Amino acid sequence: MSHILVVDDDPMFRLMLRTFLNKNKFAVTEASTGKEGIKQIREGAFDILLTDLRLPDHDGIELLGESRRLHPTTPVILMTSFGDVKTAVRAIKLGAYEYVTKPVNPDEILMTIQAALKNAREDAAPAGDELEFVQGQSDAADRIREFIELVGPTRMSVLIQGESGTGKEYIAKMIHLQSKRSQRPFVAVDCGTLTKDLAASELFGHLKGSFTGAYADKKGQFQEAHTGTLFLDEVGNLPYEVQVKLLRALQERTVRQLGSNTDQEVDVRIIAATNEHLLQAVEDGRFREDLYHRLNEFAIGAPALRERTEDIELFARHFLKSANRELEKEITGFDTEVIALFQNYSWPGNLRELKNIVKRAVLLARNGRITLDQLPEELVRVAQVPQQRQAVSSTPSGSPTVDLKAIAEQNEREMIRRALQQANFNKSKAARLLNIDRKTLYNKLKLYGMEA
Image (cartoon, rainbow, N blue to C red; front, side):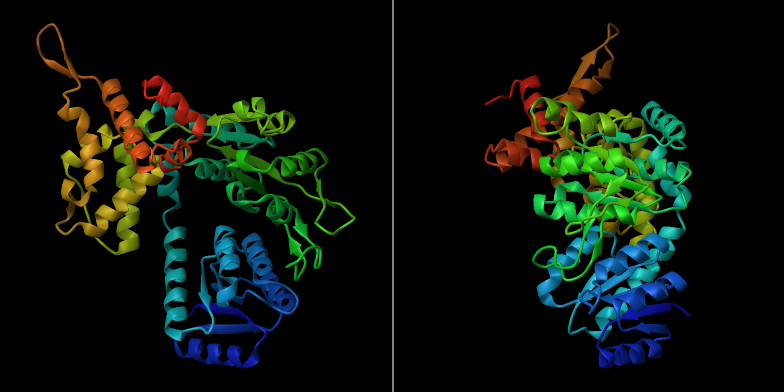
């Protein structure tokens, strides 16, 4: 029988929820305040934490943080009023499984709980497969594995650089698992979503009343990651003012919550990631050079998928297995034409794009295997352009040989052309569509003679 901790200050609502959940074969423990909920979390593990976002003394995000720190695999579901949906969405980014709006629909919350339990079981089962998928079999994969094994056991800060969708967060998790902190928290922060006003509170925490909307004390991500690893994703997007505070925290190993006059000691290992050329950002005055060197004690490059075509079929089969589990299907594999097309395509969205394409194909597949019919028409059309233009050369004997470099370049040119058209030739918007930064797009436009 699964055990659920329900934290809500409304006794009638707790009674209704407990009765409903008991009827559906769940054991329920109740807490009426955030303090009591945190006490329950610290005293034992639950299969699900179900908490109101607004509590008299704490907020649900604080309970989320404590649960993630002590029981990182326990799904957390937030209950919130419609007006707090933006906060709930932010909580999803911090690790919550899902949120439901009040008044709660019993059937909806039951489905959400069942899905969370199913997801938790599946996440626990395939850990070996996940590691294998990231490692791959190419020379690039071997280099990443070697770097992870070398730097993992140290205390060095690591900077992971690569395009969006190349698996930078997963490399960070593997470093964490190889470290002496592997049993301690791994806390990920998407710096790209942090505004100047929000970033300091999110990273370092705040005291109740320190600003409008600060209804309770809140731990920052540095405190949540204490004794563990803090992963700063897209660190190049941090506002300059916050970079100053981050540098101070790294140098002095202390943080100060907003509204506080005292410093708190923190012991965290920093792993940062970026899809931007940080040295260029330093030269442009957008990123502090001293912070760059503090983060870049050891650098790892996450290669683009088009640079490791030997791994594409391995990744595709892994994502197929994952999609079969999630969608409860039994698709056995890919037609040879599909694999060939995958290897011809430039994958501007990298692993993330491949995962989405495979999941969509599994959903559409009816006859046991994935064929070209289940792939998006746009992908098939773009990937077949090099074949249609016959990007081949001839050997002295007259037999054709495929020019893989020409194929990759043609694919990339075609994707850039289409993105520019879709963005009405707004280069910033086109770069976002391609999941690359503006500097990279400008360099590619220059390389291919496509500058406007």
